[in-house]
Image (cartoon, rainbow, N blue to C red; front, side, top):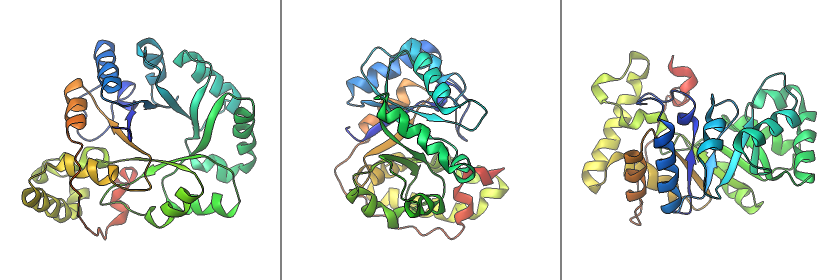
Length: 274
């Protein structure tokens, strides 16, 4: 279970196409206890996730490594970071990421504030939450020093694949999100909205592999990322304890040999679903 990272956006916001709603704080406590017992030692959050940080601050009793993020807004980096520490009830973070890349694109000097936090011993690793490979290319070209990256990755969306070995060699910790494409992999194939109909043929291809392999769609998606040699953390988000337990039971050693090429790459970004 060492690669699993528990995402917490569901603790503060309604999130994902199949979300059942925000869990109660009692449920969050149960989820956190089961996650820790199941070998998950890292939490991913952000001050942009509604009140998720406050919920964690009230519910976390285990020594999780916590990664939070600086979102776009008018609050300076140091002030926002200190606010996250206060809400989370801790004096330092494992990781702190720039949540919205357009901030760096407009003001590259903002990275000095992240470096200052690391130099002060307030955070162990700093980095970026990315959406597109062009963002990664820019920070690599600019020689930006970073330790931790988070970006979307799954068997439909592999745009960051060409960079991952290079990042691994540089010692960058790689966390991936959208393992289940925000729940799309579980969506009833007959109930896809019109905008997502072009993806139906790929989902049916996934279903065929599931039948042949005897694995569920969730098992395939999760293990595809867990088995990647250059991925250090695979984010999973859950609404309830049962979902977490299903994920924990889904870890397999059998190799996932799936190769689906999606032509409509723009539909793999949930921003384009509306």
